[in-house]
Length: 482
Ligand SMILES: *Cc1c(COP(=O)(O)O)cnc(C)c1O
Image 1 (cartoon, rainbow, N blue to C red):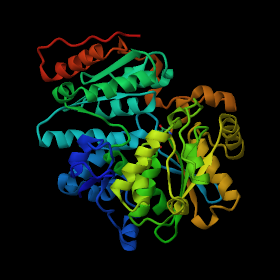
Image 2 (tube, rainbow, N blue to C red):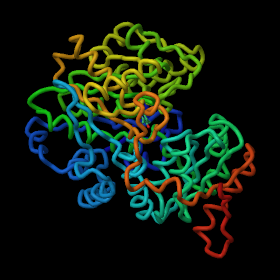
Image 3 (cartoon, rainbow, N blue to C red):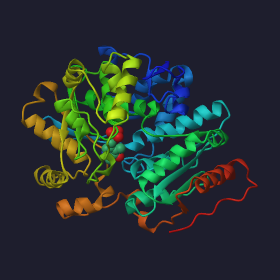
Image 4 (cartoon, rainbow, N blue to C red):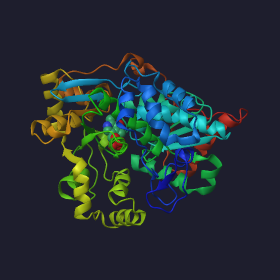
């Protein structure tokens, strides 16, 4: 499989190439040159496969010749072995023809683990083939950093340094990062905001000598390998509920558009998907686009579902590329206009095409809290402030009749309610307990370094952390406990 950039000006790469590169050099995002296809009989033959085996089957065509099929199967089995539910991605029925699929049974209790656990192993394998090491740097306001750290913890060829804004992440989120202690992990609490952290990461990538010296890499949601690793759970749910002999619909709590893009990919691979509901919180740019062709950026407002607080969904560029019949020049021009004017110009016919598959939904904080309470009372199910928006979308659109032709609706549950104990307690009066593998999270030793918002200081820290693994003689950087 070959990968091309949505903007058409970057080298064509294979799977290993896009895994390590992340973003394309022209600022675009990598896409498979063509969509792998499975026939009706092939989908049917996948029914009943255990999740890791299904995942290997679905991901294999994207990997192509880069990894042998038996190796990929081993990596998939290994990636999901630590999940705490035996089905890995269980379905729960909530209503007539409404289900939720729980994607939060991984080590950090959010759906990011579904892709990251596999990605860490893919990195190790691909790097060992070429005898290389990389240093991953990232900024996080919460879920992504902890999932990335867990994914590469103790791996041989990857060092990781995650910046978080000091005192501005939730305690659960911070402790999930800072209590993961291994020689290849560095946590830095920056005296600044999340935006400062992101600017520092961008500045490190822009510092070419440093970038090359450290072999910097990123694991943000624009990496195609992450999207590929999210396709199998859509297939798993659809096959359980009657596909390929009937269509299903999915409802996805959305931020950067990575998760719902994986559902779109499954659709393009031949899985019968009747509708994709894009569920947003008060930061509703995608809802405004899908309901009124109004893709205009507004300032981000904090909400109860912080992982969906976005102004611009970076992965939307991949769907735009498809909607524009894979015309890279038109894609680049549309994105450029959006950056320059804050409003994306989309022709009416293109917008209508988007609406045949995608449907928007939005919910503010007050309604989110009420929906958590109502769902608990009516079904007994406890959904976190992200998942509940997708579930509420599925139930209300179904009741309004607008999804009935699309088949059963499956809402993606993206985080465990125990990750957001305060919001859950306010909505229901109950404080959900952390699952057993994290029940001592508040007692574990924390290790992180506090640093000023200063590029030279941060680069020195990154260098130290990477060097302590390549040269055993060098003195390790010492963390500052909380
Ligand atoms: C990351 C995240 C989302 C948003 O997913 P995208 O792929 O960015 O659209 C939703 N819910 C939770 C809990 C998340 O961590």
